[in-house]
Image 1: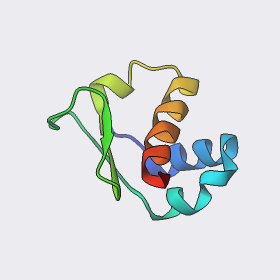
Image 2: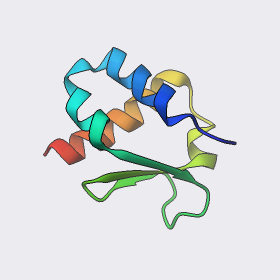
Image 3: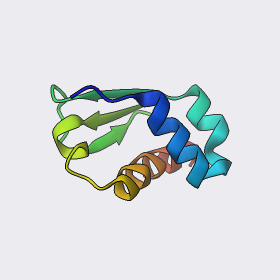
Length: 74
């Protein structure tokens, strides 16, 4: 599965407009070859396990990205 990061960022921005600056600058990496089981951030990148992400409903996908953005904002 290939994830369109532009569409994900656009959807998250529509729901959480205050995250615009972070969404514009964050790099999102979607892969099943990550040493995590869900999602994580290192403060500059958001890493998401595809097999986890594809099983979520759209609202939950937006929440996961927003959650990781909040880690970056903190």
